[in-house]
Image: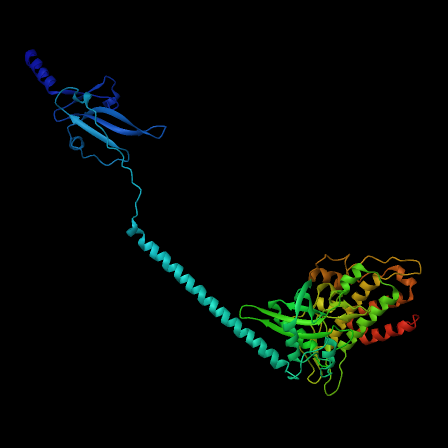
Length: 507
């Protein structure tokens, strides 16, 4: 090829090649700002949204060449593959660097509008909420009706059971005069007032103030026709304790000067609430526990109290034979809080919620299945280690005597000794120096059964003949072997004899 022809060819090729402006998209990382396209190629300008540090969108333009293949042609036709960021492109091929003045704009990112609910859209939710509310209300009303009907049936059942167990006597008897007269007008069986009179009194009681609270109920001072009485209101969960205590008080020949005087028992209430009442004599000195904290005793007072408790316990433990005899009864919760102090200085035993009867005809004991009964601090060793024979009534009596020995120790600490000594030991509960204020079974078992510890006998008692005798009595009462312990009758006889002859020795 000659030089002239070669020049013509180069000039034709030069006229057939076009150049595009490039920026950010130059081939082979060229920096001259232009790129070449072959016939069929196109120049392009594109814009892309870029998120700045301030969170706003800013446009970023790029320029370059598209080759003459199908992909470049399709993109220039607007068939872009969807991008996560906003992006747009424009193409041209009509002149060199035709894309320099192209300024494509990317579409604005759409913003989702907040949904608007009209009254027709929210109607199903309102209907659903209303339906649920109505259903719950109806359900609660049904439950309330069932509960009220059940309580009414339960209230009727208690009244029927009470009437069945304690038949009404003397239906024509009128209530008049003081309580002492009414008690004298009863059958003389020592089982309390006739049931009709009991219920009449219970309705006429006027509560005055609360004087104490225990694990079974609350005790109130009340008035009946100008006379003071004590009303024990049992907790609703202690129905069985009310039945048991009422049954014990209603026992034939139960009345004794050293057992709390029983007046009446009744159930009051409506379909929604129930009150179980036990009405007894009121003693303003309160329990022996409270009395000992505020008073010291002289030897005569101590002997009178101890003898009266032993007398009441002996009456409980003794079976009286006859046409209408009295069964033997074990208290099973003897402690200073369950003994009341009377105005004449004597004491009387109260709280028979755990008591059991011994039926000699059938050789049976109506004892509940719980082995551990009573207050842990006063529990006998055989109860703590569960070695007690529940079928033996003697075992229950001996457990009472163990607790009685501890009560004797409490009283004796508060007794003065000597002619000129007018002070006594500070009041303390048994084992106060060995166990916490509210000991559990393990605490008591460790001290009483394992270590075999008993309350300490003060040396000053040796100087007083009566306290020396009482110390021997209490030590025999709390002996580890139940068979060695003194009976209530033996203690009563010893103390009665001590009253007349202080030089008596226990055999």
